[in-house]
Image: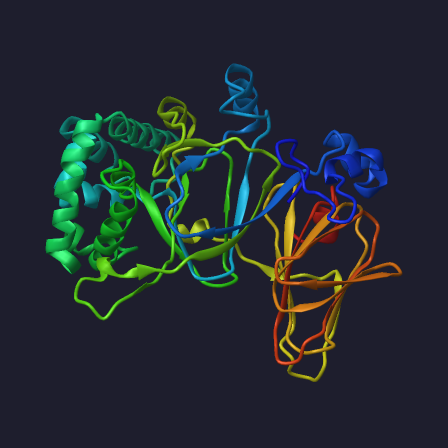
Length: 420
């Protein structure tokens, strides 16, 4: 949902693209946003339903995006950066950022195939560099740690296909045999059983993929409904599937997974640098050189949503439970508000803002009003709301939650509204 030239949204009544509409009428964007973003919406809004792991990837910063697009426009179709935010509609799991260094060191000691793939010399150098200094706040020490992490990760990513195939079989056999004792019983963030099940599950989707070993470098994160995380440009991540395995068997890796649904919002770009869990174009050299190599627990990646202040809730009854939640990343291109109206007739009136919005319904049904115009809205329906327009959402079905997500951009609005 957006105006990216590769696939702009279309008006279902007229067939016109949203890109054409906002370029013909700058007032829909506000003159400030239209001028800064060349008459294009500054964000892309997405819903993903994930049945199997999506690629291990990162998105380039603005300067690198310009270089990559100039050099290889086929694989890097635009010159923009792509920081992004993920909000869980259903329970979600994924890989996000590099783990704390002590956890990586633990896995080098307890997962033989992982150490072999990194290489004995690189593994030893990494552990000697970071030992006792994993959490140092000294800038020089932190930079040395990042260089050691980059060297070890790059060594893994340059492994031969033959080595990946051979040692992934060893890894999966170890995971199946050791169960809860796998990876030395796991670590502070994940249990051995959890990691063993994850290894076998991912191998079932991408047999013998290097991403199996990358997992030991990255945080394995789970988000419950409504939780979110923000990924800066040059942060490595991968979206996995399901999050829950259902089985009465003693071998849970033989169980089925359930699809994961998430909301994504990002700067308007299609640039992706991939390195694993994908049959698509991979660019290992670019990926290993571009990453920030920041390392931290997943708690530092998760967002802290807050109540959205610039909306008036009309709730039916004193305990209706209706709510508006703001997800406000530290960038100017976008924010997202999740609105949940619990009772028939409950409504949310959003104050007019100096910027465009896109609204999608993910559950239930209701009405959406902008000025004198009112339309039906239900699960899967999407509306564009122009700048300076008051928007009203109202639930129209009894005993059913009416849930929407509203992505918007308002330059200067975050600071002046006190949302950060």
